[in-house]
Length: 177
Image (tube, rainbow, N blue to C red):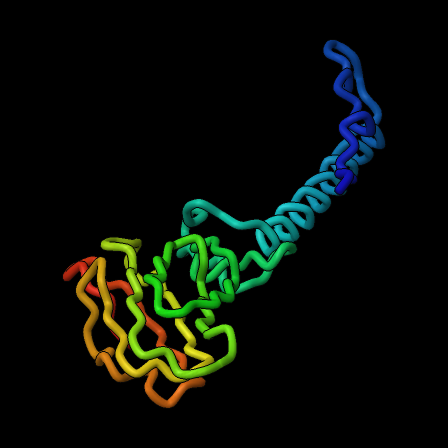
């Protein structure tokens, strides 16, 4: 974006000291300053509505919202993650990380997986979420890496089930929500 602000339209040499100056020169300078300030306001508001911020602007709360960037990257509540990862497995441990927001688990033939271990990060930012979807049935799911509440071992038994986990930093626990 090219700025519309033009500092050259303001006459910095006006008024001239020690002489009677024409009032039109004052009006022209004030008009040009006002025009530039209007451009500055519009451009700042445009930027504030489009940029991702590391911290809140003065007098506001941080809200980067939820959005999808190019390359399957998302921003969710200010956390930048790869939107999804499809994992084909025969029961080997799947290690989830905070760089991926949603994991899709499937067997090569969509057959039932007898046992699956899902390792989640031991800690994360408060409010961080992980979504795990079993596309095929998984008889027994073992959770490791951190405390997980409200996600029993048979949660994926029917297949096509999504579990949303949200990290609570006060208790260092992933909660099924």
